[in-house]
Length: 108
Length: 127
Image 1 (cartoon, rainbow over the protein chains, first blue to last red):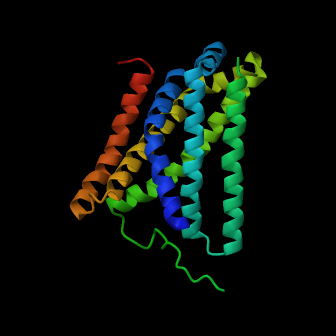
Image 2 (cartoon, chains in turn blue, cyan; image 1 turned 45 degrees about the vertical axis):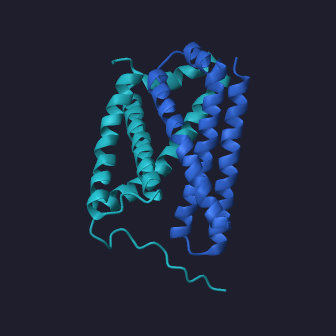
């Protein structure tokens, strides 16, 4: 299997996994966006929330990095600029969810 | 070696169709969504700063503009979910007929509005 096929397959798998996670995420976002600090923290301190939010972030950033790299493929012709944009995108897609997940697992 | 791969055509060149509208909206909402999720990550990180520094975030989220932002995000997330389902179905080899692409495109557009209302009402315990 070549790189492009693998990328497409991973995009489709992450997309399918994201659908139920996003529905769960939207419902919880709507239900507690204006809640008090204590309520929000207590939501993130339950193990199920920690796991589901972490999975949502991992798949959302993974899927987005793959999708946005397709946008770069379509609109950026210069290979150097495209590679640099993809590198920045990948670093961003690793660091942001990683830091957030560490914080979520340390909230008490 | 020069890269002579053609780039995507400029969107203003063609007449708009339902499928092109859904396709470009899918890309735009995808980028908006990851930006929004990053802001939500910042919101989660702000929890580490304690209750007093959370007051400003709460003040914004409780305002009309905060509510409007959440409703827009609910629509953007709903649109992306429905459009992804449409893509997955097409990847399985279904829905390529011209009439079907129009119908599924319209389902994504109107379905995203319906699901925005549904998710908002469910989330706020109105139903």
